[in-house]
Length: 81
Image (cartoon, rainbow, N blue to C red; front, side, top):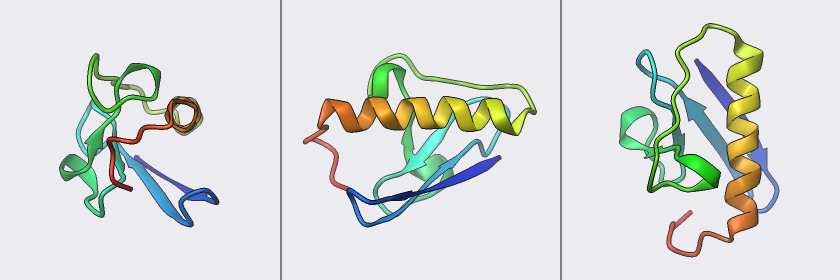
């Protein structure tokens, strides 16, 4: 599964993916799939990892968008975007 969000704040496309059967990743550093950053609770890229094993694209999109909102609200200065 894959979702692309056009970020106005970072002026680029942000790609979310689930390359395998569970863990979710985001391309924040020019690396997609498992080379990207793993999604963790609360919009973080470190900590308790998020996973989704279902096949519903709407549920996948909801998880990714909720994570993205959390990420933006945290002002993650340690992630080079």
